[in-house]
Image 1 (tube, helix red, strand yellow):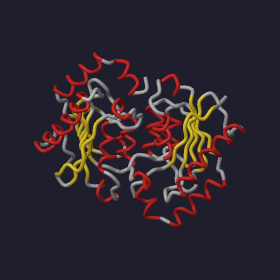
Image 2: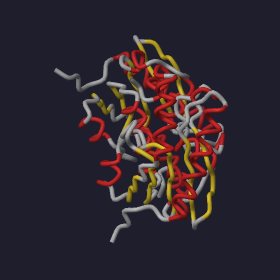
Image 3: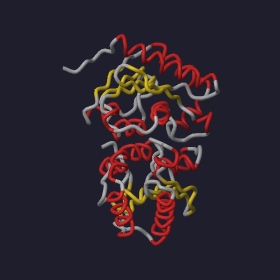
Length: 154
Length: 154
């Protein structure tokens, strides 16, 4: 049976993703972070780099994948992607490309990405609904609505 | 009525994507290229950077989006993504994120990506079935099957 609640370890990993998001915000960036976990260890973290690098493709999850570097399929096959926010279409596609089987989502109240597509392709998606993640995004969207819209193609 | 065949201008833009792909191959990389076209002009080109930059996220289309830089939604809304190869899940997701309404695909014989998902979300997808694109990928896959598998998460 599929797990539907995060483990204590998942929450530790989410804390690392939140830390990456907060660091990104302290740099003037968009506070979305991620961690790629393999065999219980964090292989890489990442955060949205739209402001810092002028990037259109480095969202939290994709920056994390880039920081993890080139990996063989067998590593992705046992990975968990931990992200502070529900994955957008692009990040969902990256997870599907690499057949990452498990995704931990901090929250999906401020933005709901393609969780249904992930599930329809067999990915286990666990939404933590973490109040700290919600607050971080709510504050950011209040402060910089135009930057946020740019990031999600609105 | 939706157009189903590429225009002469589309084929010119595809030639630019092919040139980017060939340049990538000459650098030791994977020969997949793309061009982002807005108002009939090529805004940026890109090519797969797995080898050159050790990148897990810079496919032809995403490298092209990165090279185009930060753009407002209204620019993507009138763009065409031209790519030498059928877009993988990640690149499909990037096209959907930015609501790019039109995609020209060089070929989908050597790899078939998420064209159905694009169409289901209202994106116009035109497959050129260009013999030069097919040959370029066939040669590459013959030469470097492991590198190709890594790129598509196999």
